Length: 186
Image (cartoon, rainbow, N blue to C red):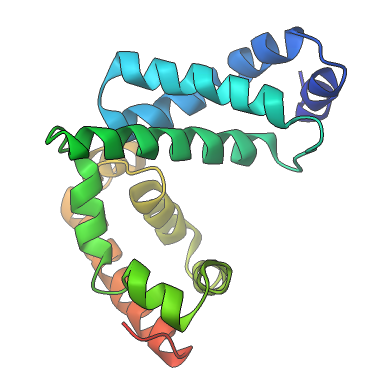
């Protein structure tokens, strides 16, 4: 079923909306949650909570891209749960590593709030990514949005881990330079 029909089901308050969403986007949402949480049960809970949030959001919202809408919800729910884990001294995995890789080219939250609002930073990031080669852009998004391990990215594209790491390193350096040229203090 296409996205428009699924969204229409939400607007009609049909419970089929959730089953159709699960059929089409369940794997996608589970993948996002699992890469953040590394726990099947918690990931499944976040996915179910995503369906509930989508149900409560539509109407009034009518997303243009259902996959992005659901992806954002499940990602935020997963990060909230992850924050709960790290507060309890549990966790690990790809999140600290990915954030550490980005910290040299993205300003801290405190500096970002002072220097530029989140929307401006997101716009700059989108403009930067639109100028990169498609494969490098995909690797960047998979690593820093979906938090895919470098090993998985390399395997998916049939390249070495070192090639992915080097490409990401170069992109981070270019991103840092781009943001500095845009007036963002790093």
